[in-house]
Amino acid sequence: MADVAAMGSRAEPRPMTQEEKKVILASSLGTVFEWYDFYLYGSLAAMIGAQFFSAFDVSTRNVFALLAFAAGFLVRPFGALFFGRLGDLIGRKQTFLVTILIMGLSTFLVGLLPSYASIGWPAPVILILLRMLQGLALGGEYGGAAVYVAEHAPVGRRGFYTSWIQTTATLGLLLSLMVILGLRLWLGEKAFADYGWRIPFLGSIFLLAISVWIRLQMQESPAFQKMKDEGTRSKAPLGEAFGQWKNLKVVIIALLGLVAGQAVVWYTGQFYALFFMQSILKIDLFSANVLVAWSLILGTGGFIFFGSLSDKIGRKPVILAGCLIAALTFFPLFQALTKVANPKLDTAINTVKVEVTADPASCGNVIDPVGIRSFTAPCDVARVSLARAAVKYDFKPGAAGAQAKLTMNGKDVPIAAAIPANIAAFGKAAIEAGYPAPGDASIVKLNSVIPTTAQAWSVVAILTILVLYVTAVYGPIAAALVEFFPTRIRYTAMSLPYHIGNGWFGGFLPPTSFAMVAATGDIYYGLWYPVVVALGTFVIGLLFVKETKDRDIYSVEN
Image 1 (cartoon, helix red, strand yellow):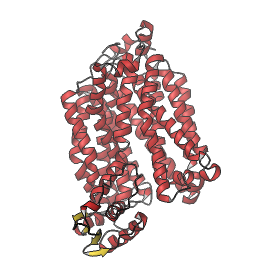
Image 2 (cartoon, rainbow, N blue to C red):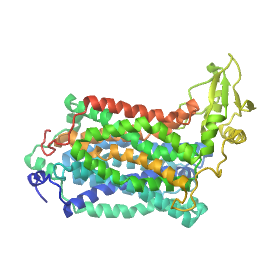
Image 3 (spheres, rainbow, N blue to C red):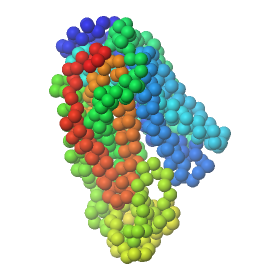
Image 4 (cartoon, rainbow, N blue to C red):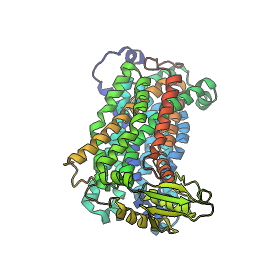
């Protein structure tokens, strides 16, 4: 392997060497795993709930399935601390070999885990433990991959090299999409729900075997090896990274001035867009997945483009421009998505008058980011039910002590005590008032994996714009984070802001945004969450983030 001095001198454009290609491939496979598993679990949450939480009713089991999903996000920063410390103490290669083993085996074991009907309560407990193991491993995986690639990259090309890691996140999504869609079509819905859902998890063992085989052949990163040879490794990476204000300040700036905005743009452009199409626009699962898949295919090259652009003009202007443009255009883009994908719904939102009238004192806060609250007040039950039925409403303050009342175009609609009953009743009343029924001919629908109508391609075009925003903010982020911190604490320090940003700011975006919709009755109100965070990141980044593209990352102290 070339030494550090040689690598540092090769700033001019040149083809990648075989060794560098292997480095990128070995590092990127972990990111493929990350998003493959993420999308598998998110897409199959209802089936997983039926398998492992069958002791509860349908609504409750789905909530528990999503909470198990969320457990992986909650522990990711702790994994970043634990494995980041190991990476700075014993090396990049050994640490992220361990992380991919834990992550891959945890994913595989989900496919083997007996259901609640077979072994009772141990089934959901083990499922949650496996999710937490995955989250811990992921906390160390991304930081190791980004550091390993960046410390192999020639000076002046770190953005280009690390952008390949970001690209494989999308490849992981595409792979999971193709596996799920293929198995559904091949097995049929019943067989897939019974046992077929396990196959994607079990099949991940092949990804694991390839990843481990490649990583075993790799050498340590040149920057860490140089530091090891010189005896300049940190003896206490955690204390040095977060116990010294000069480093902790950089961690906070990296989180709030880059990663938080990157995370919400990422999750809005891919996951919330998919959720919005399925839950609010009532597009069927197959069509929504295929439309998103096409947008990913068309937009993926943006990761490489913006990564390379950041080598020329800097990480800061590319990421912050992506945050600003996304924040300014999310509302019109999602409104256009509604108008194109479900034009009848767009008309109904503007013409059907739905009002909830109640004594404000009888109404509570209906924010419920993780879906575990129980609502009993008629005012709250009505608002939550309308939001879940994707019906826009206005709240009208009533007289003190007045009972909650719901009207659609002036016609009274009874409010039941149970939310599921209301969803059905409100949905039926909304259809009579002018809302489209599920499966309405005006709603975009695909009968094959290739869109054949102008309506479908128009939806793909809007989704592709959202994906391009993702590529602008995500393409350069790995290089930026690596360059922020000195070699001796790099793995530890960069992993924490990345996983707090993407695991917490981003990971909880879909449920939080939907809770905001439920609280207000406005199907677009949830977009204020990513808009405010992205604008906040733009301002903080503009004021406090320093450009790093020309920084020497091979020194122990930057």
